[in-house]
Amino acid sequence: MWLMVDWVLISNLGTALGTTVLAVATFISTRSANRSARLAERALLNGLRPILLPSNWSDAPQKVRFMEGKWMVVRGGHAALEISDNAVYLLMSVRNAGAGVAILHGWHLPPDSRAPLSPVEEFHRLTRDIYVPANDAGFCQVAIRDPESADFRNATAGAAGEGFAVDVLYGDAEGSQRVVSRFFITPGPAGHDDDVDWLLMVSRHWNLDLPAPRG
Image 1 (tube, rainbow, N blue to C red):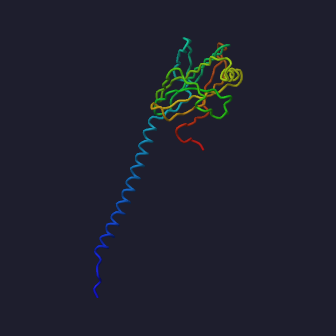
Image 2 (image 1 turned 45 degrees about the vertical axis):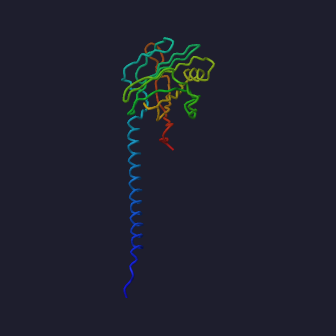
Image 3 (image 1 turned 90 degrees about the vertical axis):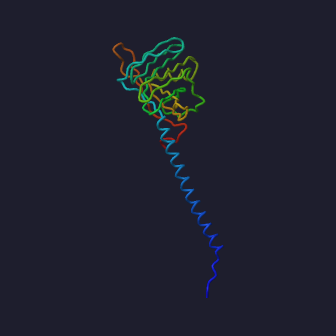
């Protein structure tokens, strides 16, 4: 007995199978392309990412001018601090250990070094752009000109004790990958002229636009 071959059915099944195979191949290709794009984007971001640390003690001193014409000098790995009745001037020598240029945006003084990170809206914006090249030294300057402010109280009280913290907000050359690094300024042994030797340390970094490095 001869079986009747339904060529139409076979043709439809072949078309359906081909469509399925094409869909699977397209899905795999799209997934691979998306993964490649993510890897390329991550590589690009890594090439732009900055990270600020205290500079090396061997880095050259830096002389920096404040807005009102005041000049201060800071040595590598240190901070320079001057407090008067009306203002606090702080200059920190930092080094960019990242692969991209760091653009400094602002600063904030927490009440103590263990305080949680404050909202970015509470940071004081710098009056000028400060760039720190990759794998090079630079500076961050802070001027507090309001004696009634919490920043002034935190700085003066900390300087009279064991030190105080400064949160520095910065990002990459594209304005993204924002990071807040918490620096700590602490008094060291007095120098030969009895001036306080202000040491600079970093205690923590927060990523604002990327997943946190710690859970």
